[in-house]
Length: 151
Image (cartoon, rainbow, N blue to C red):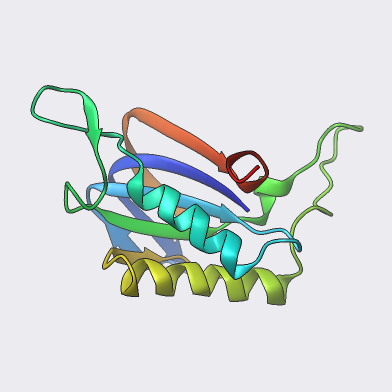
């Protein structure tokens, strides 16, 4: 599982010219799923996401979590996080999970963020042609790969 996390002042997702997800301060999370990912991996990655201390405290140090600052999450599925461009110029996406499996884990992550961690969580639309708009804060971007995080 791969998460590309961007701290944002605001972000939104539009499908067919309609805004379907919108947040203010928080995380824009692009989520990629592989066929080997499980709910257990999703749980560990979500826990890591929620507990990251990347928001500034009163001393201007990155020491606060998303819950500490009352932030929100905009979670967007993105199979292209599994792009493999090592050979040639056209990326291969064979490392991305099958759509049914990926959608199930994407929806699971959303549900757990809302229910287990009480995070205000907005979403994109799985498989849709989405337009993502954001105002990056920092910029501050973090890459989490379960193959590295959960060794």
